[in-house]
Image 1: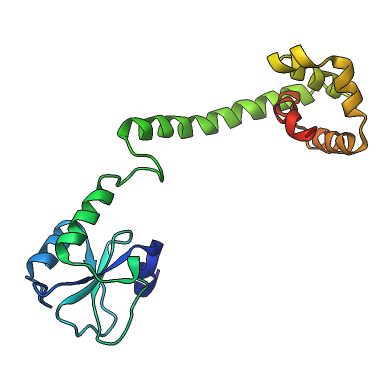
Image 2: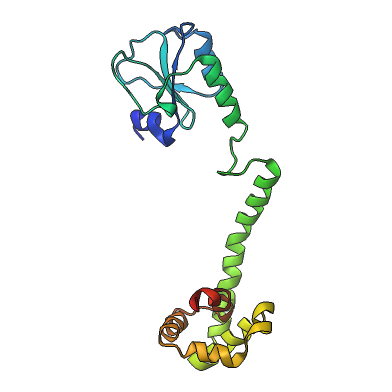
Length: 199
């Protein structure tokens, strides 16, 4: 990734202008940025003493240049050092969390769920192989689909096997089902999608 792309990554660049900011390595704000893991990226320019671009996603910063916009800036306006620090602390709170997750408990639950996905896929593939190793006909597969649909409490109350079989004869639905059968989809998968198929 180029330096300039790193600066522009994720629409997260802030333009900080502050009279307390000086183009020196020992400037208190620069020292603070480095302590937070930010790294300097120089593009062969940077001649504004009181202005700096800081990207909170890629954790890079570069000095400003008079009359030149180096990146799109959050809010299209400069902010001061103390304002940036407040904003940064808000986002730092969520560092390592998945987008739209706000607590460690929710993140753990999400991580546990994501860890289960490969296991569930493996189990589904095993079930698929076992089911189709019996070489069911299309009609047998449709019967199994109808049985799975009827296991749902709502369908068991408001429809019947006969109605499901009638729906399966609809040209559009039949073509969908024949395709799903050719793709070796399990009856339980079709049952889960039945309301969409018949919508």
